[in-house]
Image 1: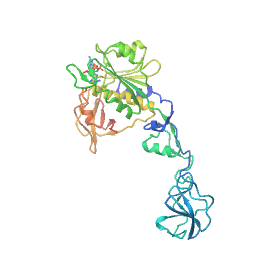
Image 2: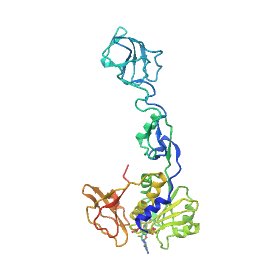
Image 3: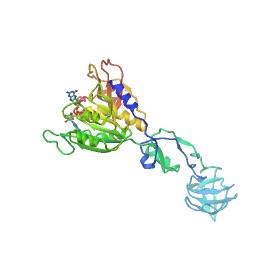
Image 4: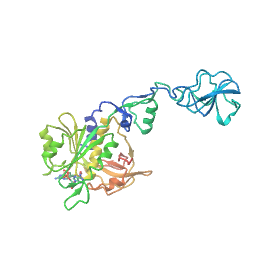
Length: 379
Ligand SMILES: Nc1nc2c(c(=O)[nH]1)N[C@H]1C(S)=C(S)[C@@H](COP(=O)(O)OP(=O)(O)OC[C@H]3O[C@@H](n4cnc5c(N)ncnc54)[C@H](O)[C@@H]3O)O[C@H]1N2
Ligand code: MOO
């Protein structure tokens, strides 16, 4: 299957998850499932915008008392010639014609005087945001700032597209997860990059489980909870690659079995009985990254309701093409175009770690602009 068809098929195989109402802090990074509306006007009542004196009518004014934000409001309306000392954010009494900042006020003998401009230094109820206004549309990303806005508008929870939950199964008798790998051993380089990549694509890794080679352990682990299961290694058809056999036993529907892309051609997408999707990534780490961006990222973007960004660029440097398959080439974007960074062997993440995108170079490429797939940035 071509690289483009595999990506499109992966996106089409996933349906957006049902919206859920979640506490504010849990909504960070999710997409809003409905417009964010102002449950209250901002400000809630007419308030002072400066520390000073709320005054009524022409100067000078007799000072009747003091109103603080969060304190008791002034009892009754202000009449012409009357004032109260007031703090920024405190409700101005009915009848206030202006707020005179303390810097402009002369005070003495229970009176205040100064050049007050009618209507100045007050914020009217709903002047910043009228009640009921839709301030952000459905589909907007809940940023840290959006959380502050939602709180100001009276929300304790938000309706969002939930983050798809991803279980990661890392297979291989030779794979170790800490320390220096001994002879015949290799450090797991895929389990450490998947949580960040998954989060960037809108999901959340719930578990990274390391499994020995063998069908029993894999069969049992495929029951791990999650909207998507990712299996690393075991995607090829060697003597220790049991994924296909296990999927056959389970009666899974294999939707993609190999993609015409280098690296990463032995990748796989299947629908498990019950409807969950499984993505099989090759064991070579750069091949696994290429496959994750080909099949896993589109699945997660679709489940999370996140549109996948599209970007094209000229290539500013030589690349090798493949006679039949698309090549994914680590590049750094620059004003001259995307510069290949090299070090792009399937077994190493060196080139990808130097790069900020992968250039999609089709077979038979003749120098035209290429698509770029962004690599997850650090946060
Ligand atoms: N006869 C063929 N053999 C292979 C083909 C092929 O087309 N015909 N394709 C090769 C390619 S390309 C890849 S990629 C691998 C994919 O194999 P698997 O997904 O089954 O992965 P493994 O065989 O388990 O491992 C491959 C390689 O990667 C190392 N590895 C495995 N897991 C990890 C990990 N978590 N972190 C770091 N490195 C890992 C493993 O030790 C092997 O060296 O198949 C080729 N063979
Ligand atoms: O996926 Mo392999 O090269 O394509 O390492």
